[in-house]
Image 1 (cartoon, rainbow, N blue to C red):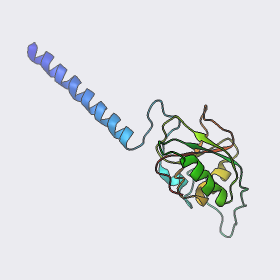
Image 2 (spheres, rainbow, N blue to C red; image 1 turned 90 degrees about the horizontal axis):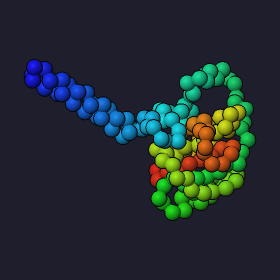
Image 3 (cartoon, one colour; image 1 turned 135 degrees about the vertical axis):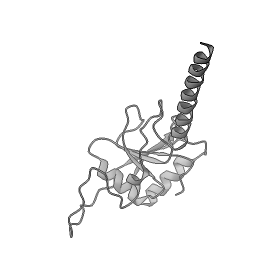
Length: 158
């Protein structure tokens, strides 16, 4: 009977350690973690020229309609002092108006532009203009600002 109990304990310990390892790998490689502000998915969506999984491919010879530069709010999610102001200056120099700058207390993995319903095209145009913006995501509830909000992290290089 003691052998069965020991095997059960060893099995439970093995499953627990495996789950812990998977959790660590998910955190390290940027998969969703409870308590984060936004879901993390693959970075290809923010790369210029990358197709959205739900977007139909453009027809040959079709020219996409230009997207107007809408005002953005820039938030610093790093310990780098003045990063939001430097990012805002780069965005202004690139032709995008900046409504406000500030700090963000949440944890964001990489520099991301968030958009509200109806402004995904503007967010993708913004990310295409600024390669330092590595992701484009729908605006999560509770994110400060309105319209496009760019949360810059220590990886941001204008």
